Length: 201
Image (cartoon, rainbow, N blue to C red; front, side):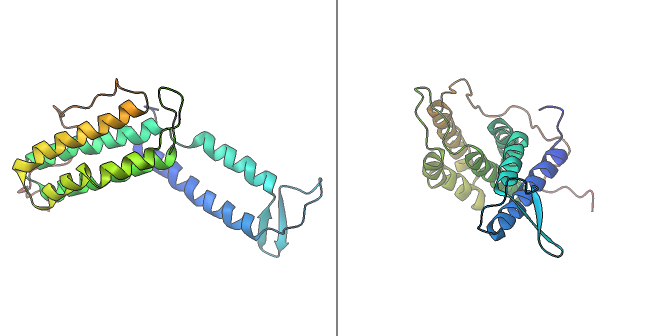
């Protein structure tokens, strides 16, 4: 996965979402009667408009699942954004901290959509949406509040509590070895964290 750049990954994801939407739209508009066995995958419904057979839709969905990103891709993005969030807040760059908070939260939500019910250590399904809802309305909400209020003193304990809540989720899905910590180096070196920076204009 290290050979896939973020721009390329973004193009793949956007293409998959658009194609999935088109397939769903075409499938819903397809005739309800059963197609003959020798009907091609794509048939003309009206001039200039095509529909796909259910078998073709299933095949395309299977292909899209094969190229969809894994949950670890989403979590790598979460780590990236939350690490940058720490350093933006330490510099007092609250607009940038807000950006990284929002991106981190959105990528957690993306993770939940990728695999909403993974197996836990006992083989039972884990309700990631339920866990996220609890975190989102508690520690994440508190963290956002400290950013909105530009409260550098409260930010540190709020950030730590967020990492602790994240770790409880890691343990719930059987990955206690994914132990987060306060970042020691910013992963993003091209973004100036200084809120008083004057270049580029």
